[in-house]
Amino acid sequence: MTENDDDLMEEFETVTLTDEDGSEIEFAIIDTLENEGNPYILAVEAEMLDDAASEAALFKKVQSDDGE
Image 1 (cartoon, rainbow, N blue to C red):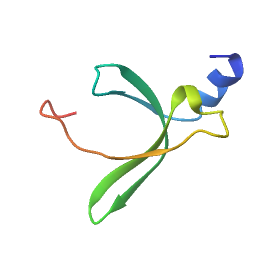
Image 2 (cartoon, rainbow, N blue to C red):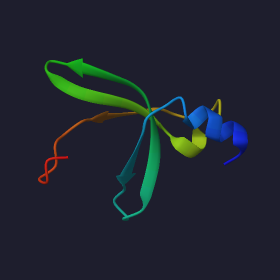
Image 3 (cartoon, rainbow, N blue to C red):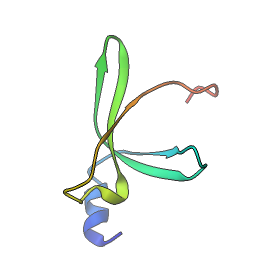
Image 4 (cartoon, helix red, strand yellow):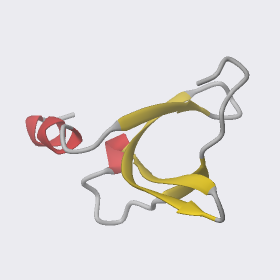
């Protein structure tokens, strides 16, 4: 990441998710919303945040067995 990327990341809360291969991916949370009582997170891969061609993903927020 460049210094500009670091500055951009400071604007967003981040979350790290694990994909099906066990790789960790950091996402920048763009927005949160609720639909029919269910919370959702709109996020972009952190390393793609400043790329105009990046795609956002919508995740349903669920509580894990350990309460997080």
